[in-house]
Image (spheres, rainbow, N blue to C red):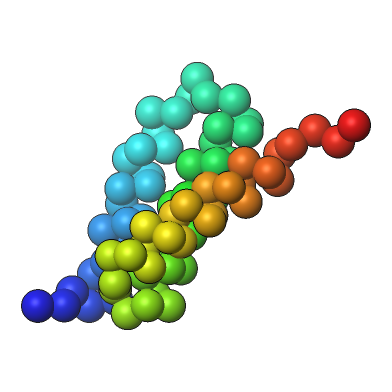
Length: 74
């Protein structure tokens, strides 16, 4: 049984909100990584119709991108 995209998006958004509220001690890079993973998971889920592999893949790619965004330039 598939969950609707609206329900999945609401669940992921709520999870991100609750998780990020407890992240006050994190560095900016850590926060960007977590935010990128959350956004990537939502995007992966939406693009693959709620497929678990797409969601996890999106989270992984989003996390890497979020981590690299705050990387200091030499």
